[in-house]
Image 1: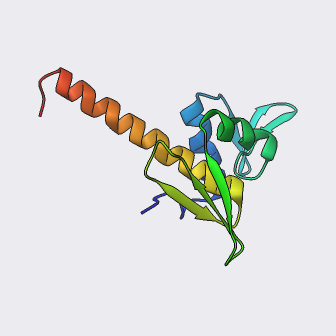
Image 2 (image 1 turned 120 degrees about the vertical axis):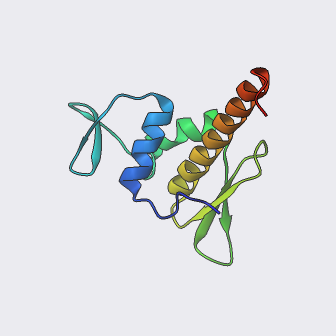
Image 3 (image 1 turned 90 degrees about the vertical axis):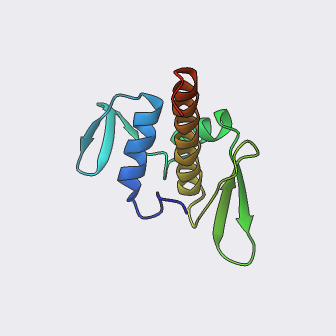
Length: 114
């Protein structure tokens, strides 16, 4: 189950910015990076596409509906949304969660914790 489907675009954008280490100021439901730059990868292709490309996220239309799927060959996750950028950002967060879980498990194993 995708735990990110119930979050607002603002909450998704905020989590993506946090995962990327981007400094921002949240104001009126928008992430502000500077006086002239907003960050909204769930809706803005210029913010989303570098993340999609860097993380090798695939986007495909679902021809039987007006939704898009986001997937990655390296992870066993899929995200579906009417907005392709939103689907990709949900998948990005799932991928980062999996990476963090793997790092935590590796550190516990290295420390002799089972």
